[in-house]
Structure formats: C-alpha cells, structure tokens
Amino acid sequence: MSPFKNLSSHILQASASMVGVCMMILSIVKLIHMGGTMSRLVDKILGFDNVVFLLSAILSYASMRYERRAVHLENLADSMFIVGLICMTAASLVLSFEIL
Image 1: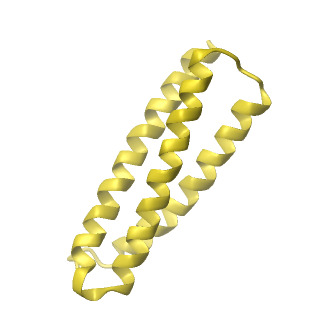
Image 2: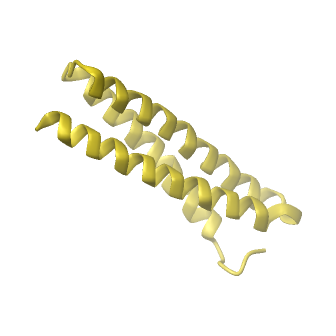
Image 3: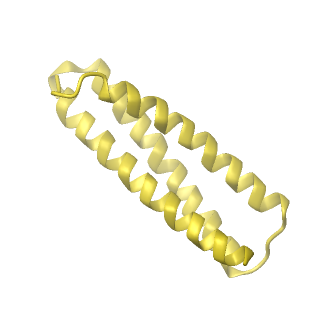
C-alpha cells in the first residue's frame, strides 16, 4: 500500500464531487445562454474535465480493490485529479473573462 493511508478514499470522494461540480457548471452555462466561441470552449473544457475526474475516481476505486497494483493506480488517480483541477481552473478563467 502507499505511504499515504487513505489517500485513495480522499481522491475518490473529491473526484466524485468534482464530477457533480462540472455538471452543475455546464448546466449553468447552458441556462444563461452565453453564446459565442468562449462558451463552447468552456463546454468542451468542462466536458473533458468531467471525464478526467471520472477516470480519477475509477482509478482510485481500483487502487483500493487491487492491492498488487495499489500504489501505481493511486499515483495515476492522483495525477488525473491534478490534471482535472488544472482544467477546472482554465475553464473558470475562460468563463470569468467571458462574463466580464
């Protein structure tokens, strides 16, 4: 197991929550009918981000289930989670400049 006990369970919880956050932001963007290229860009970034967080959650769950590959799967889940956070930050920057 990894030196960080229960890191996978934290990644699983946070990733699952972030999937919900991405869906909520996508819904809000659709509801306020922001047109233009930036809105489509935000949609695409958040759609990709949603998949990244889902993969992070799946890898985290797999690391809790399969002890032989736990460290490797947990590291992948952690990396995917960081990529998801970076994408979420990019989407929020694009969205904030679109609103201004």
